[in-house]
Length: 209
Image (tube, rainbow, N blue to C red; front, side, top):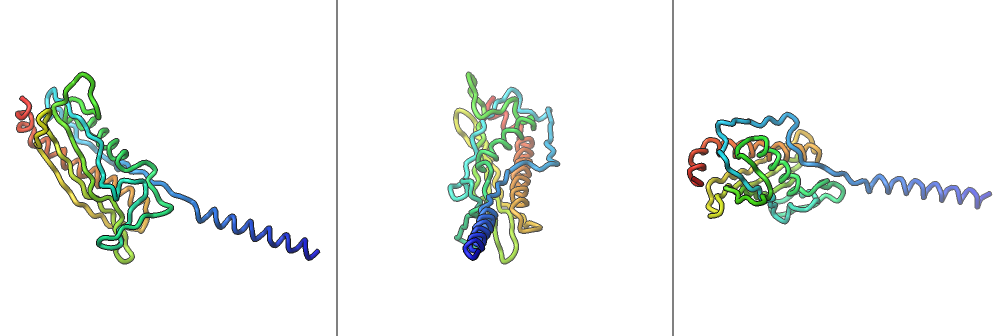
């Protein structure tokens, strides 16, 4: 009887340990998406007539480019969450948002990551310098620093650039809110860059005429 009870006790302990272990090893994955209420201004009057724009894949500085979400807890210290990750690499997600935005915004006749049989008039490059959770005492903020550059082809002459360094404090220390904020910040800066292009449409068009 004692052996039987001991066996039951050991079995129960092993089951509880297994359950506890499975709870501790749950990984969570997050996606970067444009805001649900995103509105893209479409103005055919400001279309760069007959122009094509090549979209370069978004480049992200190596410290923030992996699927591991970065947390900055010191001025030069980065930690990476062990159980919280990007479902898709941030460069791929932001490139998709960028391409979809430009196709809807009607800034150019056509935008694509590559063209066949056509030499595009422009090339758009995007660099993300920082994409991280910033932890200050007990609060979290979403930090996104980036730059857009528009070049003429084939001269590769820089026509326009727009750089932003945004910090958005989160209402809760929740990485789901962090992912949502990154999508919103990226979308807002795309809107600003789009407006710059529209305002300088004549100058840009003249560069390829």
